[in-house]
Amino acid sequence: MAELINKEKFIDVLLIAEGTYPYIRGGVSTWIHDLINGLPEFNFGVIFLGSRPEDYGEIKYQLPENLVYLSVDYLFDFKDSIIIRNTKAKKESFSYLHFLHKWFKEHGNVNADFPQKLKDISFYTKEINRDIFLRSRESWNFIIDMYSDYALESPFIDYFWTIRNMHTPIFTVADVAKNAPDFAIVHSPSTGYAGFLASLLSYDRKKPFILTEHGIYTRERKIDLLNTDWLIDKRLFLQKDIGEIDHIKNLWIRFFESIGRFTYKTSTLIISLFSTAREMQISYGADPEKCIIVPNGVDVENLSKLIEKRPKEIPKVITLLGRVVPIKDVKTFIKAMRIVCSRIPDVEGWIVGPTDEDPDYYEECKNLVETFKLENNVKFLGFQNPKDIFPKTGILTLTSISEGMPLVVLEGFAAGVPCVATDVGSCRQLIYGGLNEEDIKIGKAGEVVPIANPEKLAEAYIKLLEDENLWKECQKAALNRVKSFYTRQQFLDNYRKIYLEMKENGRNQL
Image 1 (cartoon, rainbow, N blue to C red):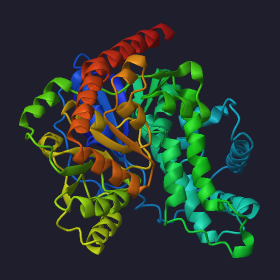
Image 2: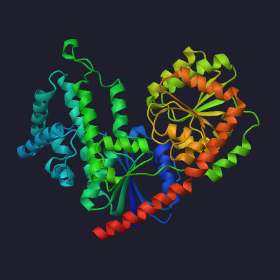
Image 3: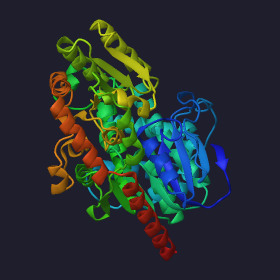
Image 4: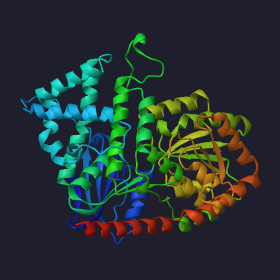
């Protein structure tokens, strides 16, 4: 663990940032930064959980004055894990681990209370700690027994490393929880490892835990795992049933589903950004009584000033603002641009966002541009300030296969840019309206199209670029909707109220 900031002030709200703030720009990181800046009356702390040190560069944000604590920990930094030691462990501890695995297997879809030891930090730091799990003979025997019982169709080496890689971050998280400073409220923007850390802290310190899910983490990890190429099904043809997921992938899926249920169970309050997300949380095990909706908000006042910088004509520029990663489905955007270029030869497609998160995918996208001979039309601009991009953009687009409530769409609306997006997350609600009747009457602020459908995307792009009256109607609706329902002040007022109530409730429980 590295402490970058410790101002020795009491932390009102301890935020858990998994792979986001302050080392990654955009999305949840921007949300965290705005939240801290917008509520100066609260002191914030941030625990950053990264993958490995080499995966991150410098801090990407100017840290606010009321950020009084920042620590950095890495979940998959296993440099010392190959060191061999004669580590002893109690057999009864691993007998209990057998019981836990059986419990999760039998209670996977049951809203039962979790075994008490799972809530106890000392179980992970003393009884079966990182050293014991990685190096003891009892751990080796445990993995062999589990393999014999459940995974004989998979290569043992794959199963062995899966179990180690899956469990080791849990012990890191427990160590972080043990050493965390005092706080009034713990707040996680996701389930996953961040949610598990927040859960341990909430149980251990008897403090309120707020969960805000931007995307449904369990669902997104499931999508990633089912589409990943680093988990290869090595079973023989006759070992497979049609539609059956191999055991290794299933292990990872069940792991994140279990962490998700554990996080929901622990949370004092569960926040989603739109109604469909709330329904999905409940389907994954969240208590409906805990679930509320708090939409995101953006700085409409400042962003609307960008409208004055727009040219009189609609720019023939379609901008995808986002990371160049598979979940954003940049390839479908490139395929759609090929169709649009055949109709509007001077159109440009700008891909604006970091390209270093998945270098292989970035190379595949560049190769696709070259294959289609679109080098003069499709451009990778890397990270840019959206305020410099919006006035030059005719259409903002998202082609993602999964989203929560994308801030970039709201920012684009405030800057006067209609949006064409895939039917994911809250995009339909944002573009067509859906909060209430008043919202629906505002009209559409763009178009919503099916996932992974370049033809429908291209059709929507062409329709908006070639029909100036339609474009202006969409721009008017976009501005009206964001000013009415999604301002930064509304967002901050909601969280100010929640934090004050949680602090008061926390005091009353002592």
